[in-house]
Length: 172
Image 1: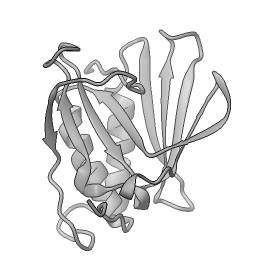
Image 2: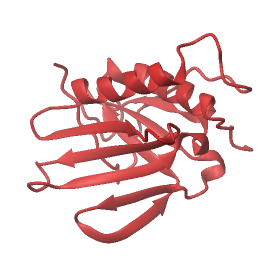
Image 3: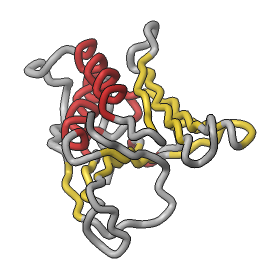
């Protein structure tokens, strides 16, 4: 099993940024169907994210497959600590999903990569809840910490799923 750490980034990393392959326009019919893409995102997140202290899950809602939830579990922060992000894949900017190598730069974290994404036009449509604070908080972006193997694959599958759900790129 590969070791992965995820979480909300509070500092700016000066790492190398690589943009995931992205195409604007209608959903691609050349790739796997949405159902299989969501199955891969769910399975790969579950299988590849655990490191003994942190892991995350990716889930889609059976009634609305474009509704997604990413849950971070961080036992290293405190026992039972979790953060949950709920959003629609249709709200994600599929053309600006980036893979970042965090092993470079001033705040280097050797062996770590991140996938960062945001909503179209940075509208605060991602709802964040946690067992450490009251009430949901709206945000427009997220950083998904992972490893060099999962990061580019997750970014590609995530952009593919967003396009299938009708996501549009930001104006600028």
